[in-house]
Image (cartoon, rainbow, N blue to C red; front, side, top):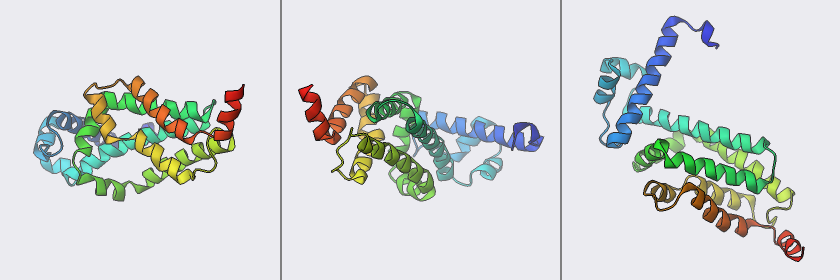
Length: 212
């Protein structure tokens, strides 16, 4: 539905929901998941707690909505990489760089706060499995393209490549390295890329290039 055709009540509802999500982000960054409470969210937005519950019936639903927004942004990046020009490796490296730069900023601290709450992980998998499936499917397309173009080793099962790369894309330990400023995002892409791409490189192509 176009914004111009939305009723005033619906526009107000959407604006209020955005304020709720923004306030929730602020509290999560300040206090973490376990210290966040619905009373404070409502107070910061300036609405009654009952009004907040009309949008999100519990804290977990609110946090999962924030995670979904982040997942949608990542999915969009992956889908753009599928249709972008250039080698598969360069596109995957761009994905790593985008992901690590995101983790370095406030979004990274937000993810750190959320993924520190292990009880949320089963909820995330059950609630947003469709988004996760789309993300993995898009990555699989890229990896298979890399095999078809001769960049990647066809003997390595795509599913192994897929789950290895996806674990690098959203690694909890990497978040800590970035937030603690142990490495820069650029350095992390360089080192992680060296480990992954050397491992999946097509040995025949590497041999031919070594003779050139």
